[in-house]
Structure formats: C-alpha cells, structure tokens
Image 1 (tube, rainbow, N blue to C red):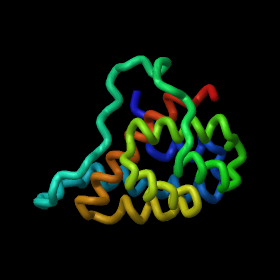
Image 2 (tube, rainbow, N blue to C red):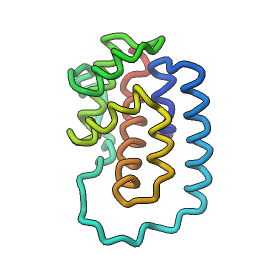
Image 3 (cartoon, rainbow, N blue to C red):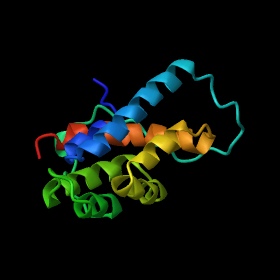
Image 4 (tube, one colour):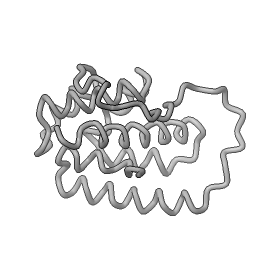
Length: 146
C-alpha cells in the first residue's frame, strides 16, 4: 500500500482550503508522473530518503522533537496535538535529512509551496519530492492511530 504524499494534510487536520490546494497539487503530480521523462541532469548525488524497510514500525520510537513536529504543533490544524506531531517528527527523523526537515517546515504554514515545488522540474526538487513522499507514507503508517 502506497500512501499519497498529501495524506499528511489529513493526518493533522489540514483546513478545507489547504486540502483543496493539496488536491490540485495531487492532480498536477499525477499528470507529471504520467508524462515524466527523467531529469537527465548530472547533479551530484544528494542524500535521499531510503525506503522504510519492512522493519517492524512497532519497534521504532513514535515520538520525537524537532522542526517538523514544532511546525505541525503551531500551525493550528484540527487534529494536531503534541503526541501526533511528535509521531510525525519521528517519521521525519526516519526519512528526511536535517536540511529536508528545515525545508519541509514551510509546507505546514504554506501548503501551496509544496505544489509549486512539485511543479518545478529541477533535480533537487525531484529528489525532495521523493523524500517527502516517503516521509508522508511513513508518517501515515506510524501515526494513523495516534
């Protein structure tokens, strides 16, 4: 089962307008995925998120403190609370580098930036999108019952 990168918005209770922006981004992502033809660039390899191995997520800590958890807590989402946002931070720690976490913080305040980033066709943004998608899937799996 692959989670959609925008399900994270529902996990923290993103407002309706936020959800519409993310739905538009999801549609754009689907179109881009169908028409993608590779970056062809020769950018240096950057740390990207490793897929979460079939490791028991039950053995992974489900609470952490950090920039993503703080952003989750302070941006007034309906379902956001310290426990859920701490779990989302734990997922970020598993899947995103520190610099990717700092970049992700902006998406909690301005979700439309995620759509703009995805529509950008740069190798760096493509690598970040892949990491974000892995983060969203991991957060959904780890935090759905928190």
